[in-house]
Length: 165
Image 1 (cartoon, rainbow, N blue to C red):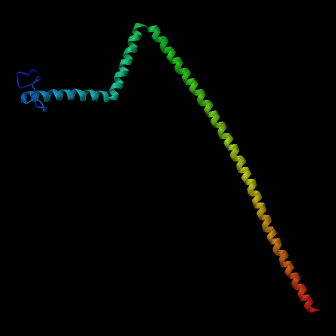
Image 2 (image 1 turned 180 degrees about the vertical axis):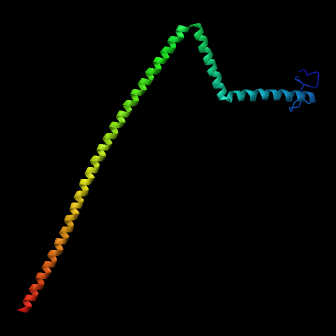
Image 3 (image 1 turned 30 degrees about the vertical axis):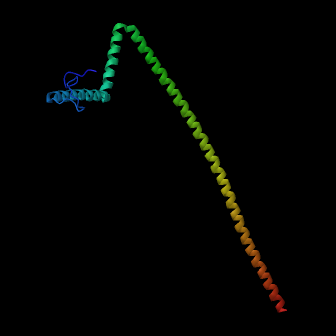
């Protein structure tokens, strides 16, 4: 094996893992690192600037459309007419779907209202039956009290009538 003739390996670095020992080389290395970091930060900023990217994309699409129109106007006009027809068809289709959904919702609401009315009527009938049953029970209690009082009076009369004799 042969050893290098100088004490430094290639690239101007000594055997140290820390980097070059010459101050000018260190400054140059720092400047290179700064430039690289600056480029990286600029690239990241550009990638994260969504509004600017959207505008750029819109401008490119507009330029492409203008170029295409200049090259072949009838084809572009036909394509635009096709797009308009497709958009109108889509709007018509969506309007029909919405109308159909509204009708279905209205029908469902009407069915719910009818069912609620039937439940309310059934509850009202049940309440009337309960009220009538309560009235009848109350009347029975009154009648039972009257009968009891009448029986008590009759016993008194009988007892009093026996004692008088």
